[in-house]
Image (cartoon, rainbow, N blue to C red):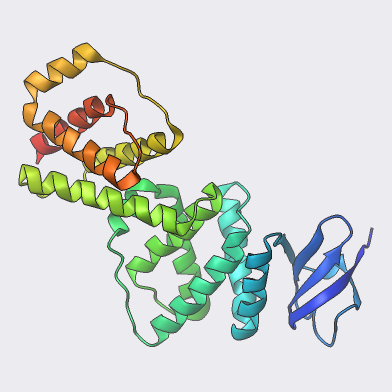
Length: 280
C-alpha cells in the first residue's frame, strides 16, 4: 500500500528528510525524489530506493550540512556501498556510519585525485583484529576503482575497516583508535625487550594481537579469566623472561586504561610471548 510522507528538508535532487508517521524523521534517497520539491510537500514513501533513520540530532545536522557539499552521484554511490557492507556483515549498521563513511570517502577521493597519500600506522593490527571488516573494506576499495577509476592507497582499506567495525560494535572511532595505539605500543615493548622483530604475518603474532584485544575488552567489562596459581608458578619458573615481560605489558595496560587488569592475564600473555619469541 502506498504511503505518503511530508518533506521536512530537501538536501538535493536525490536526498530528502521527511516526517514519517511511525519513525518520525527519516532520510529518503531515490533518483529525483527531491527534484522540484519543497518543504511540506507530500511524497510517496515507495519512491525511495533507500531509507535510514538519523535519530541522533547532532548526526542529523552533520548529514544535513555535509550532503550539499558532495556530488549527488557520490551520495548515491556511497549508499550502494553501505548497502553492500550491511549485506556482507549480515547485521544492521549503526546510523552514524551514514555520516562518518560518506564524509571519509568524499575526502579520501579528493585526496586520491590530488595524489595525496596518508599512511596508516595500524594497518597490520587492523587486518589482524578485524579480518572480516578488512576483507569487506577491500571490496569497497575495488567498488570505488571499478566505478570511479580511483585507486586508493592500501592505508585506506584500514580506515574503511575501522568505520565498518565502529558501525557494527557502536564503538567510536576514537575509542577503537586508542585501543589500536595501545596494542601497537605493547607489541613494540615486546620487540624492544626481547630484541626481536616480530613477523607481522605470522599466526603467533595474530594470536598475540587478538589476545591483547580481548584482554582490553575484558578490562572494560570487568571480566576475569580465572585463577590458575599452579600454572602461574610453573610459567614463572620455566619462562621468567616472558613472565616478567607479561607483567610489564599489564602495567602499561593499567596505566593506559586507568583500570585494574586481572592478574591471571599474565599467564596467557606468558604463553603467547613464549611461543612468539621462541619462533622469532
